[in-house]
Amino acid sequence: MAEKKTWKGGRLGPFHLGKRYKNVGTDLGRLYAAHDVDTGNAALVVMPADHADLESWRVRATSQAEPPYLALEVEQAPASGRLPDLSNMLDLLTSAVERLEKNEEARAHLTGGAVISWKRWVGRMKRLLRSPRGLLVAGLLTPLILGVLFWPRVPGNSARPDSETRASTGVGTSAMTVPQAPTLVDLDPSDVPAITYPLPARPFSDQAKVPCFPKSGEVEINGGCWVALEKRPPCYENQAEHQGKCYMPVSAKSHEKKRREPHSVQP
Image (cartoon, rainbow, N blue to C red):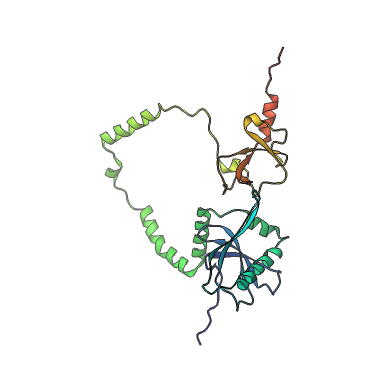
């Protein structure tokens, strides 16, 4: 009989396993925080202690607040699949979530949204460099990279023809005549607070609170002032999602500025 292969961690199917949640009970098996390597979506992965009756199902569960509904979508099922086996699979996953109900780290993992592509790429590179194969590849590429960086440059190649110089100068001169925008939106991530899904139950400490200014496009939600965006879910990482829309919080400083503005007095 062929020797059974042992799993050594890291990649499991379409998921990359991260932190293992312990103290969840030996009957459940091993429970991990994970991410889908293709989409970056957060996931929980259970490696059950008893998998004799495990079948290959792939399902998607959905719930929506407005209009309210629950759905179980079957993406892939075994040809001879039995509903009791599907029910057992869902019961096992339900038990895994129930045992993490008070785990704040698990809540943050599952509600933090997808890991963006460049972070997944950095993670893959780190895992590759920690492996023996990655160290071998890095050793082979290092001389090549150093050779490119220190390759002698021919002085004649750095000089550009007069016509090219004149052309580039002309482009720069014409660019100077382009007018500047009257107002710009600053999307520097350091200036935008990261918001955890879903929209919080109370306003942030630096967020404008009621009464809001509807004429400025503000809406009141949970005692805070928000601005609805044209973007629809899935929202970006610096946006809050609420009832099928994406929102950004209004700064409290903007309200202070509006209250300080002089108002005309009617005679």
